[in-house]
Image 1 (cartoon, rainbow, N blue to C red):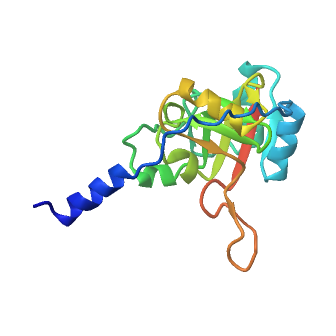
Image 2: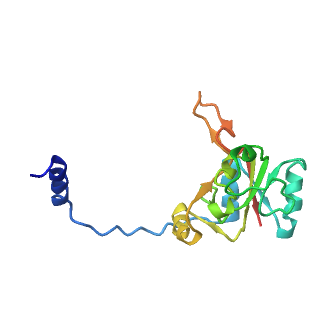
Length: 189
């Protein structure tokens, strides 16, 4: 005698629809220009700074942010908050500025893919007060379709970050920095 569970599962198995091939996904074209990307990032509350020489990156960051900031970054030798995957949240919460490397940007929505390997700690891009993402201008794609096509080549966990954190849930009042960084600067090199 079979159980009710076995009868139900047998009925489900016996009544599966025929397998159909996946549809062909069209090629989505778009504008992958620095101008389009910059316009969208500014429109969502971020800032884009073009850095003509990567060697000037520390100098540009010091012009943009106060010298007394607590900085976490694998890109800056003068970073003064060491962070790794085991860093306690209390230490992360005290970080004023995180400077991280983005892998590629998406012009249609101003987002930047940051894989876990570039984050130092999964929580760092979300808990820092200010976020600066360094992005090679040659690594812009036009659409999210093109971005998702690149994901298998960049490893496992990561996140698309777009502008500073914001919400307008309460009384439709815009609040910047409610759930993450209060500001985001993209440093295009």
